[in-house]
Image (cartoon, rainbow, N blue to C red; front, top):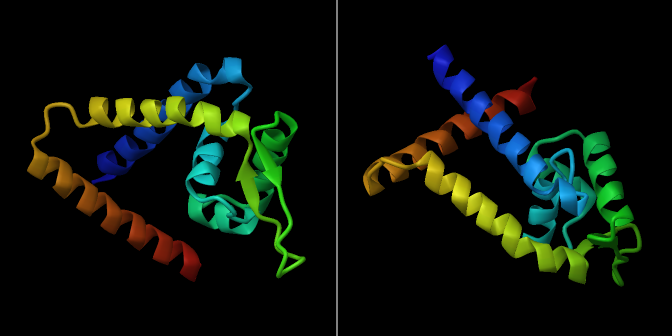
Length: 142
């Protein structure tokens, strides 16, 4: 079983490294492409919500968001009803690169599930969701 967790770690590190290399020319380094994808997919998400969704600490999220703002991929808005809420929105530049990010994600999924049947792919997704849920619960308790 330890090999399964090592495999999960390898997949995460390899896909992040390839994504960082692929999008480096677009000034998306240090996994910023992952943050940008979630912001595009969830318009108006707050920084705290983004950190929770990606399971990163708030300071890591802050650094990534600041860099995305500095490179003009994201803007931080204001909420008309709640002045403390600062929603994040993708700029036209962020929206424009999203299809390439999505293509990369689909390519990695295709490569990673190559040779698996539809049933095996569904089972893998179900089992990984359970493992992620268990780890999140454990993390929240400690």
